[in-house]
Length: 438
Image (cartoon, rainbow, N blue to C red; front, top):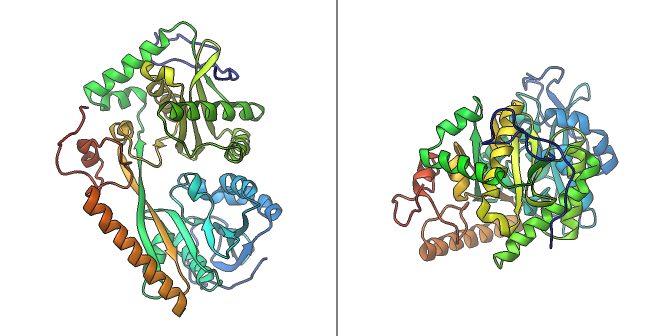
């Protein structure tokens, strides 16, 4: 089965001679914070009121004001992801979005959650790959927003509150930890998210790689572009997103089928969600969606999101027949050079999973934390104690059977210890035994 061709944008090509171009391209009012909270955000004063919004149309009307508060790590709690996800899951959940405002009614903070049918609360998209969840807040207001949000949550009557995929050093996690004695909770490191920061351009990035890594990137790029009909295309137009997302899913599923595995990145509902999201992002030039072509057929795809000075690399898809051609390396290299460094961005967030190629390219790694809160009642404390005991027993059993292992590394994934140590990962192996070469 051939992959679908996608629309064209012409790019410069890595490894090509200078100048050469290849290819076709229920509102509930609460007074939550004291007047003494400092306001460092222009135009936003101390927090004065809170509401819980469940109406999708009113949330859509807040999109611009909400989005303006999001920093470069706030994509998954921003309006584009949240509103697209809530629309896709409207048969299963209802919005439960906490809003903080100052005395003039200006939006100062947001915590987007969803209410499940059993009465519990959850973040928007834990099963779909989110990361770095935290409160959205005006500068200088994050701690106050986190405290106010928790005030509402712990008194709101929810049977449980699943705050999954939290930012390791986020205000929300810190505020919840500070209440551990009063609010029953469980916590675990869910995974690790490598990232790459760079400020001085593609040439300097290559120079910072090991000699072997640099040689391999350049060699595989040259080899792919030496193929007749090789092309790279970026999707910019919202009208082209549906076909582009379909091609991404097709390539991704074919790669997993070739390995005899089943991917979580599949299904009609998930395709519809990402199509809606991609259209939203393309309309504001924040979509990363590119394809490598061999003649008229897409053989590789890369998908992600631009958020401020960062780009989040969310998913890829490679035709299994082109794995050996270095298509994955070529795609990642162009995404970094063309869409991050050459457009003035300074970070490529590689998100969940410490795959070997991520460890080699990354300059750091962040922990992603799952937190569950329980009501501060007798029954809630009992459930919290049971959940904590089960989690501790599971962790002990896994450590005994499999040894100490990074939560970002799958059981069948190789570990390159020297890169884990270079990144300062707390789970880095202490020896090099069985470690593949650089």
